[in-house]
Image 1 (cartoon, helix red, strand yellow):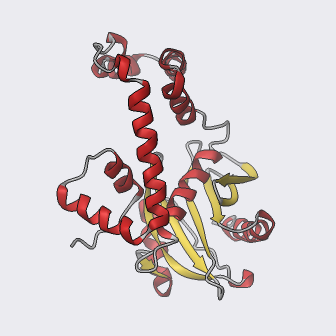
Image 2: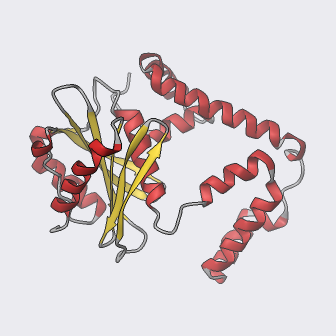
Length: 257
């Protein structure tokens, strides 16, 4: 069996039945051992089937020429970004129903982009925090190696927060894939077994500064902010008033980077 870690992309590919048989068997075995993640994957699968049902009446219709991939790529070379926003709006209106709401959730990222950042952190938490075997790629005892690795991959100097003052020790970290590029994930735990995840990556605007805002995805809560173009998120299954002072400590440590 492969030792390759299970990623969020693997889970979605499993739902879409796009994995090789060997990898599909690995994911199935992983889900058998992680019922909480299996429940989330089952919800993804149910949404997929709902979408297929909602769009079944038009599934066999020819693809409109306006949505031809080669034409879209050509138009993107010639048109400004504003034109893409208009196309997206037309897609929302034309799809309608459940498909329209799904597209809306993908496009609605907010003015700051923090909602996408927080959701990426929540997904990473949902995949790795329950893992009792290999939640991190590089352990906290090798923090210097971890810092160098993620800084090189993000092409930004990254500092691993020290949360000892808040009662949490560094377990380690890993790189995770997001739709906005690679992100650095750091995981911490305390003497009670509670785990925190800190996710950081460059934002689309290299000069972006955004105040800290509360975020929540299901039972995962946290805070997200951006400082000089770097985005930061702290998430856990803990009350917001418990996480806020920890988030403030992370922000204070990250600023001198």
